[in-house]
Length: 540
Image (cartoon, rainbow, N blue to C red; front, top):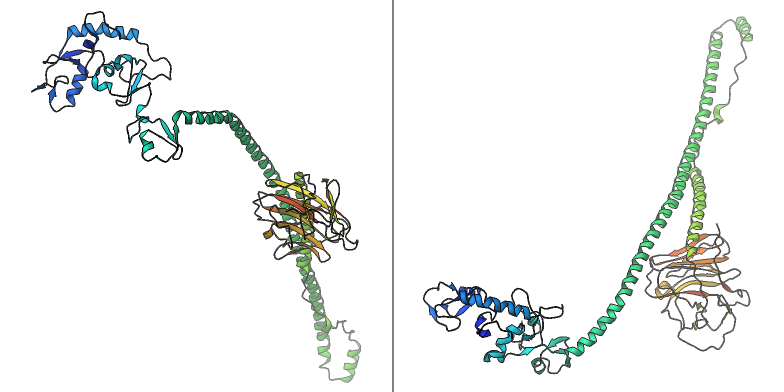
């Protein structure tokens, strides 16, 4: 311990309250010295005013006077200590909790006082008998967090069962049967784990930045797709509205022209009738005087001079019939339907072109093929061999349903493939989920994990419960299958005619989907043509 340049001992310059060098020292009437701040604060917290050293009680609060001599001697002593003590240099070093002003590095921490001390302020713990019993350890920060609140002991162990820090006494109580290890061992393990995490963080951050970029790019593509879809839809819907309006105008014009024709016919007949009425009236005026003549000679002479009667029509068979409008509206709607069908065909062609962009390369998996099926070497063709072969059974193979799956499966996004069905009298085509039953009798419906078209002599159907019969405009040559996994959509297209066949919507996919092909039975050669997975050829 450093000493001031005086014959006084070091203890003479320490306040017995703060254990630091005197700051503005004052003397009580009983002769003991304290820092003015320390004794003032001490008396502020007491009911009676007494000396902290000798416990002498004062009737009134003493009027403290500065000890000038002690103050002058303590000042150089303080400066001497500050010059020799090294301040806390590194962030990891623990500062002394007692030092005022500049804190110096602590050399020990007391587990009883829960305070860290520099060499100067540690001295009482080395000298005073009561303080010597305190447990001193290497300097530690946040001592209050390192002490067991139950046993007031240092937390030096780690309980693996409850994953908490414990003291030695805890292992004899609540944690008696729990495996415990020193904190250092756990620290080393966790530090290694933390190091691994820190090493992985940059890559994880980069991956997430790339994902953000990917999501933003997807949004931009979605915006472009939406704008194109709106433009295409607006064009088609506008054309349809024009067709409807034209059909309405044509229908109205046809009805009005028929009505006008009837009105003209009626008008002409009325004019003719009015003319005959006029002629007949004039005839009546001519014959009326003659009918009153009583002289036979005069009558006969006058009768000879009469004009020939006017020509008149036999009106008993003449009539104006109300025009019939039966079929007029129907014919207009037929024309509109024809126009709509043309527009729908254009729409389907554009839709097919868009889904063809999601073409995937798939090949057939021989380990799933029914024993009757013959696959090409490239895995793109399959037909029924009309004879069951002896093959090793495995969980993937179909045993009764004459089908085969592809090697590839899809659990997200969109995919599209085309299969040639030309010259076949029976076939099945679609997708199936991974967990489908492949043994024995199978119900091929969406509920059982199948979304497929089936064709035979009875026509084309989508297998569901009940089955959905579909119109077959002409013999199918090639079928396209499009799946939007996330939207729950499975669509089928007639590729050659470029028309939509059927869509299953609102599907729920929770596992990988496999394309499934069933070429149908051989049927004595009538259905020997293969199903062929074909590359997509987009046409305008």
